[in-house]
Image 1 (cartoon, rainbow, N blue to C red):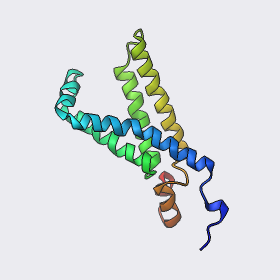
Image 2: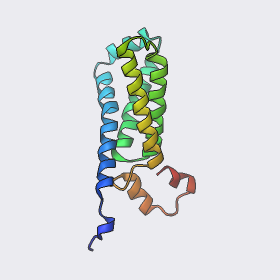
Image 3: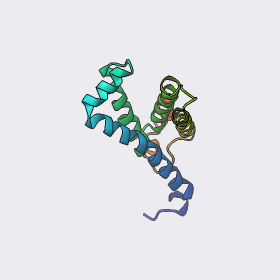
Length: 148
């Protein structure tokens, strides 16, 4: 079967894939860093007044939502989860805006959250698992199709 030119990914599809991969990279890398030295991670979270389960949930969120965005599987949900995570991180942990370093982290968290909101609105694009599922699942309930 010959593929038509309109069914092949275009430049915008490739750029959206690149954007998803770059956005997911920071979360997957951070989760890997936290998980590989779990003792230090739990100690750091404790110093911030957070429990070990919060540390584990943070790692799980970053891995799960990071992979969601990278693969384009339930990408809108992964992007929303990480958008709110970034907003919470900025507002809870980077509040000393008199410090140039804290201000930079605050602004980067807001910028990443903005990118995640854009991704949640646009969806994963044609180079994604969501797109493959959408093509094969016309009988899905409308609310489930809406998240793909």
